[in-house]
Image 1: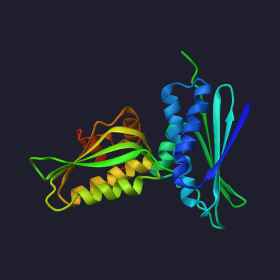
Image 2: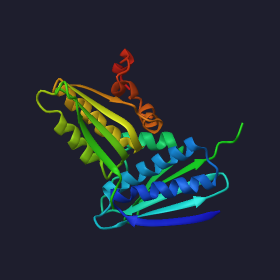
Image 3: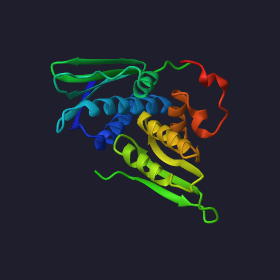
Image 4: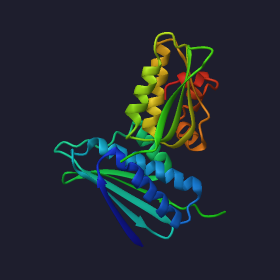
Length: 124
Length: 117
């Protein structure tokens, strides 16, 4: 199991960097092209939701856990005292859960976080 | 950071009421507002049809979808026909996942859409 951590400014301009990293790591697990695209969109959706709530001038932390048959991505940002977790009725949340499979949102100690896991499908 | 994206407004030389917007590059959080503004600015009085060409889009998320829907709503208010054309597979993926491919791509609008979710 390998851990890769990226920290970028919590700004939409950096989402492309995280999408590229996601695709690169997913390719190492030999995900299919469709699965890689799903993951790229899912990570983008998760990060976009968090960037919207992040305190100005803070960083977004993105931690990738690379396992033999799964990639877990945990993203978090600092938020102020009364954080909102991403609305589960939003388009973004629907897309995220449709594409990633396992998704959890949580808030603790001044941070809002989303963790998603994509497992590689067994070859038929 | 400089992003590789463009929104080119294409005018029909023989009919000024028909406008096109050719979108290229990544459409993500950093460019949603700009794309929406481009669409809204293009729906000006006298414009009867707006065609959004997505053939060169390289990334497309749910926020981008929201922009296209907002454009659709603005066009409808202005009595302007509105459709998207040439969505690449990665765009179709998001449109299909959210169930609104037919609404924006000019396909059939089944009565089922009016049923409560």
